[in-house]
Image (cartoon, rainbow, N blue to C red):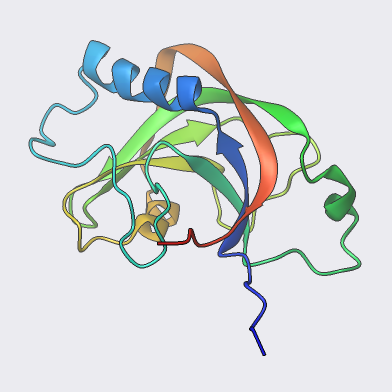
Length: 153
C-alpha cells in the first residue's frame, strides 16, 4: 500500500518573477553588504523544493480539515515587501511582508526567508530575526496560496 504524501508546509508561494525581483533588489540596494558568500537560492536536498525568496509560511504541514482557509487554496495573493532583516549570529536574512489580509501566520513577523549563510542554516530561523529595517520603497510580488509537497526525484 502506497503511503499518501503530506505537505511540508502551507504557504503563500511567490511566483518565479517575484523571486527573481527579490534577488535583484538584494543586489540593487546592497542589502547583502556584510553577507558575503551567503546563499540567495537554495534547493533543499531532502525534499527538492526551493527555500529562499520562495514563500511566506502560513503553517507547517497541512491546514486542519476544518480550517476555513482550505477554501482559499489556489487563490492568487499580492505580497507587499516592506522591510529587510538579518541576524549574522543566526546566519539568516529575510524580507518583511506587510500583513496579508486573511492569512494569519504562525511564525511571528510575516516574512520570506531570503538568504542563508550556508547550507547548514535552517530557513525557519528567520522567524527569530528581531531587527527589521523599512525599505526606502516597498514593492509587491505575486503569490499563490498552496500546500507545498516534496518533489519526486
